[in-house]
Amino acid sequence: MFCPQCGAKNSDEAKFCTSCGTPLCTAMPHPSFATPTDSVATSNSAPEGKQDTKTSVDQILESAEKSAQQVTENIARKRYRSLQERTSKKNLCILAGFIGSIFSCIAPFYTLNIMGVSYTTSLIQSGNGLLIICGAATALIFYNAHADKRAAIFSGITAALGFITVFTTNGAMRESRIGSFFTYEIGYYLLFVVSVTLAVATYYIYKDLKKNK
Image (tube, rainbow, N blue to C red; front, side, top):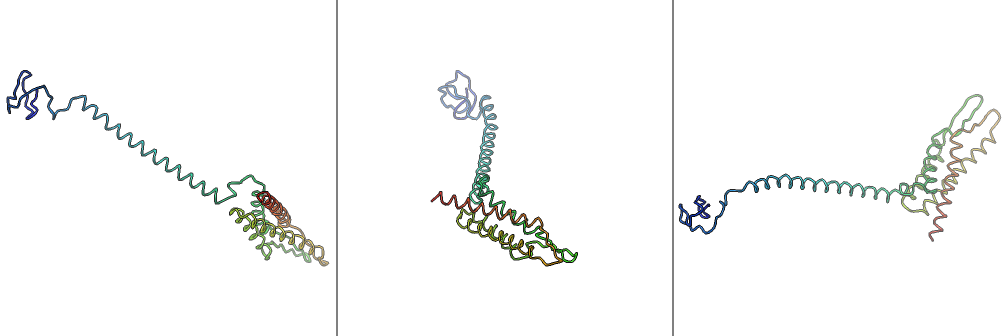
């Protein structure tokens, strides 16, 4: 038996502490000593608490990473309509028209042969090439901004400009002088396809505008 006042050890039959004289009513363990069971429980609980804290931190970091990724995807889908409507006909036509306009204006448009000397020209060298690329790019920008009416206007204007360029070049070839020969190049055919594609995109956009009214 230990004294609750001074902690001195006494016999189990003692009624008073032999050191300080404090009455000993019941047997009480020394407050300063911990039982082996308590020490084992304390040592086991410490790593478990650390493990729980580590797990909670990992879960918080993982949830934050997923939230940031979801926000980024939502912003991209909301900002870029082309990513949201990948398989729609008007989206495919607008994208194909923009990409095709660049290639058709950069590629050789026609070749002029005068007295055995060949001159190859691309549409980017003229003002029409820049206007066609800018028109197709503007149509794509307005389409992604959900401004369908403006996108249809610029798409239609670009398609009309492409057809005018194709038919003007065709007429110039027919009126070629003696000794000079024109040859169509890949840019000429690409521009015709691009003009048709943008015209189809204009049709689909106006069709959807009428449905939404």
